[in-house]
Amino acid sequence: MNFAQQFEILGRKQLVIQEGIDLLRQVQAELRRSKVSAEGWSMAAILANAALIPLNCVVNAFELKAANTAYQALVRQLYGQFGKSGSRLDGHAKTALSALKQAIIEELKRKAMTDFIPGVNILVGLAEDSMALWRAVQLVTSGNREMQALVQSLDKKIDAATRELIQLGIKRAEIHRRMHAISRTA
Image (cartoon, rainbow, N blue to C red; front, side, top):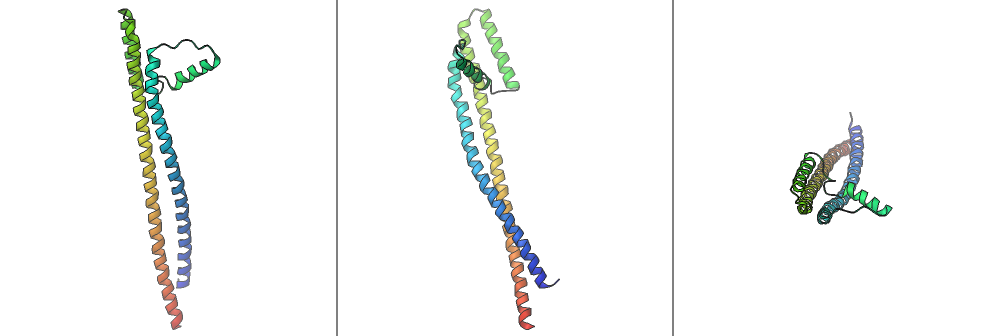
């Protein structure tokens, strides 16, 4: 293979690598924007879980009366599914806390100590909400680590491609120098 062909092949490789680097940088910029957005939503999720704790302490202290309007019924339904203590838990923790709450309430009713039931509701609800908050924090932390790992991986790929581009440039420059030397002596 002659120097002109090698020079041309290396030039095409450089072009492909440069286009790849440009695409990787676009992905990197989008990932950074997504990371900032995810951090904002993560904070919102944590704050929402934290804000529900005092609200649920109040709600758990009192039995809510029947809803009077369709709007109240909708709000109560949504709250019951997404905001009520224990609604954001699943698995063994939810089952254990629910069983504990039921056992304590039954025992209090049996002993005619129903005045303590709101306290039980508050304490069990606080435990459920605290566990939900802890899970939200763990999920956010895990997501942030994953996003950071992606950013670092992308940075490494861009650095490696840039180094390869530089090496091809050096080889191409050397071939160009040899071609120039041959053309002067010919």
